[in-house]
Image 1 (cartoon, rainbow, N blue to C red):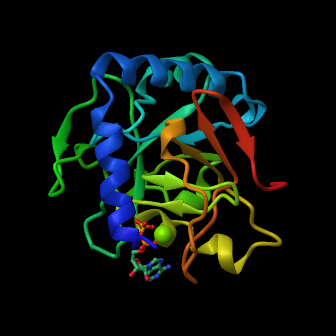
Image 2: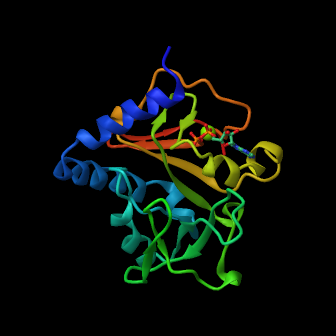
Length: 200
Ligand SMILES: Nc1ncnc2c1ncn2[C@@H]1O[C@H](COP(=O)(O)OP(=O)(O)O)[C@@H](O)[C@H]1O
Ligand SMILES: [Mg+2]
């Protein structure tokens, strides 16, 4: 059995092996599926991410979201480092800087504009691997697990946000053994369409 670290390496390599043109095609297909999803259509506050390391590029959907009256947010690592992501409002053209992982973030918005994930309606979650139980393999820092930790505690009365994994179909694994702090995805969108894992 491969370790999480070995699986991460293998899947990241496979993802990087897709040509830029192919990644763009698949990303457009994924954005089209999302645009037709009723959870997306009903969401007002939507957490996006900017693609890094050959991740699916969901930025094609940002303008669409804005035109449909949604508030778009991007993750930032936060000033006091808690391992939790914070989300700040973003519109195309806003200035970005490269954080310590080399990932683009909006230039720090005033503190009162930072929102935690539990105040989003929908979060598009980048991932390295996923399985049919909604288990997720991330980059290995647990940022989304920490930011969604309320979903483990308050599962019955606090369902927000709906967490939608975003992946190329090649990122599917037969089984990811969850550890106790992993937060499962509610759904996943690939180029083939959307799968729903929870009733949320
Ligand atoms: N809610 C949490 N509080 C504290 N540590 C956490 C929490 N969730 C995850 N972690 C820790 O983050 C680390 C990375 O988690 P892991 O699930 O392996 O990464 P990823 O989700 O990025 O694939 C692990 O050591 C895990 O214990
Ligand atoms: Mg995890």
